[in-house]
Image (cartoon, rainbow over all chains, first blue to last red):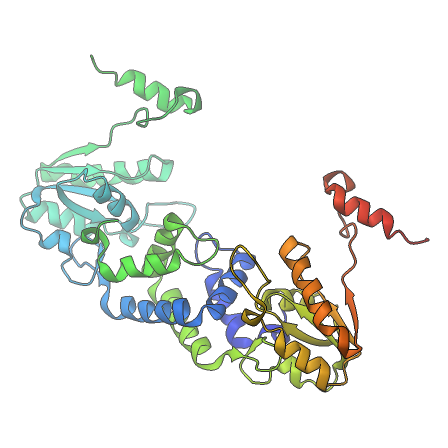
Length: 201
Length: 201
């Protein structure tokens, strides 16, 4: 879009919105217009909310979660099981597990996966601090809950090697049929894994 | 999502982002995470950009366009043809026509269409000020470029009636086959209109 039409300020807003996942250049333009049109009810609150999050929210220095306090609410919660650390790739994975109420232990957010193609090395991830936590703490089990992708699995194996000397048990999530999932739509790898890990009824 | 997991500040940001067109609750959560993860490169610039637009951009009191100056750049441009006013529903339509370089005249943004269902009455739209502009100005033609929807057409007819006494010619956009469009994919109404309005080669 030429600058003449919308002005540099709105053009800049459109460009920034277009960098959000799920918004392309066209939908970013629509979103910007929507903001301008709903100035009091949406643009002002969103502007304040962003400033608020920017000011208050930061990364937890222990686990890498994001929160208004540091250490984060999860790390500070005395009711959680400190003998278990669940290792995830991103904060979004932590949120998903928390929504499911699936983990009663602690978390550790790697910040991605190792990747030869994208040049992500162990020192680019929160791996050293994980090893430290396991070495110095009362950790008995490290559950590696990374995505079931090639990079995820490579990262899981690397971490397992690093944890070898700590004595902590290393586990991973079970593969299988998603609850409510239809067999016909599942890939062969998942089906084969679900059959291998079958349980008696 | 429970407050325990993400904290009230991020929860609020997610809720606001979810109100943008094109983002649902799930993609809003992903967008919020993306912002938190790219704090310096995206969240900070977006926060500043929103504050900037909020401070500087306002509605043009003449045509309803949004711009950093009032009257807007288009209304103030002495090279534009003041004898033609192009009436559109929304600012986005104005941008689209400007990108196409299709209109050399002035614009008038209605701010929507009349709608019995949504209770939008003539006084809820920028119609009175359009009639005023046509009455007091040197306007010879009013081109009604509203969407080809039922509400759009009802609005066009209402405006045409109101303009009856002003002596200005009222025109509408041509219907026809979109440039590059395949006949097989077009609806029958468009095809019928394109046939009726056929031109000699």
